[in-house]
Length: 192
Image 1 (cartoon, helix red, strand yellow):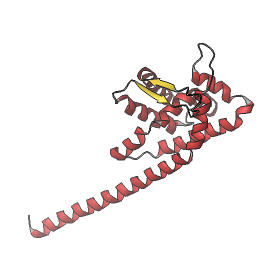
Image 2 (cartoon, one colour; image 1 turned 45 degrees about the vertical axis):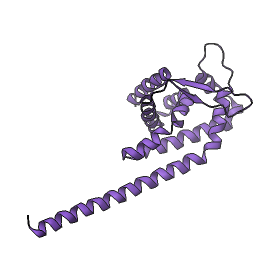
Image 3 (cartoon, helix red, strand yellow; image 1 turned 180 degrees about the horizontal axis):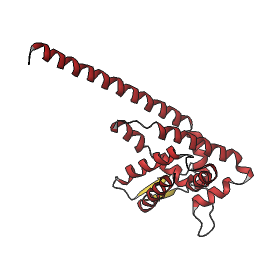
Image 4 (cartoon, one colour; image 1 turned 180 degrees about the vertical axis):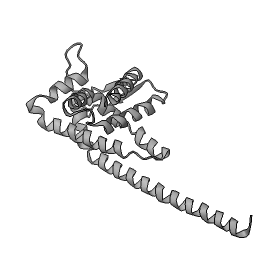
């Protein structure tokens, strides 16, 4: 190789590195916007968690089914809108997950989307039946990716912490339930 060939190779490598840095910054900025959007909804999500943890479920009825039934009542219109806002938020986030694995894993490790699927799964499925299978598909994809990420951890339980410190009625999500969620989400996404 001649000196000119080496200079061209060095220039090409330099251009590639510059493109990589630009891409990394772009993905990092998208991640920052995601964290800002999600952070803005923390107080609203706290209301969802509070209602969910405080539910008194009839014997044999799943808590998330009882929550869906509660949302259908007229007096819970504000809570229903908060749930819809969070579904829209996590659908947007799911649609713009970073492509670079190290950045994407930071988003997937933030497992609130899994807790929201546990809480809102039956409600989302009901909405998908009414609106069509493309409704919230990005939310489902994000939840599935996060469930798979959590299943790689060496834990058997995750806890939805009750925001009402006086009540302290935390809700556990077990490894078995995560495996069920993975199957639910895969089946739901396959039906789109």
